[in-house]
Length: 260
Image (cartoon, rainbow, N blue to C red):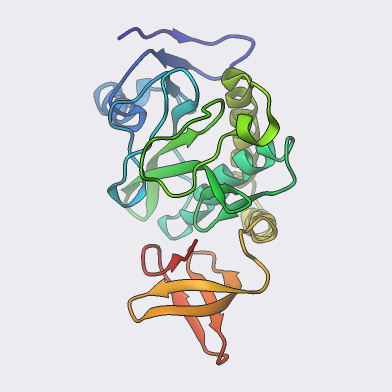
């Protein structure tokens, strides 16, 4: 394993570039636990290959060596109450969605924070927050973004890469730099005095970017399959649907699934 910490013209944040690791989230968590506040905010760990990439619901993330963008970044949003932690998921998913939208106008955010092209998944996000009292002490954001991979061999049902969408090779390093700059702009905005107004603007952008935000679609919850339309996503991340009988249902993460 080879690592390098740098701060270059391309990256305006501390960067640790690894040839291989089990998980960039795990690596960065261990680093932060060991170094404490010496690990600067926006320190970013990348890997050309992960042996045990972490996904939501305990899933793994398939990524061919040297083909994709695998990274984790640390934030210390101690100014943010724990009840508002969903906004961190929103700004990261928006930063990625808006970067990818340079190549396609069919990029959306599948609640809570998967990034989709049409009906196919191009990016997964895993956010791990540590609370400090009633606020967020540390946030580690892990991202797996399919860039140049053309063949997927896992049982994931619907992966796609940016190269498959555009037919062109892309530079993961440039895309990472742009994503981090977009994330930084959103994050700095959250520190403003009028945070409530800014958070409302983020929520509005997020709502406009959502996957299947119009019409009735298939979902599944503990009671089984049903058709519903998306009403809204609450500030705490709850997903609010209305079924064909007009009944409104509110879900936390993992309580309902899209049927793809």
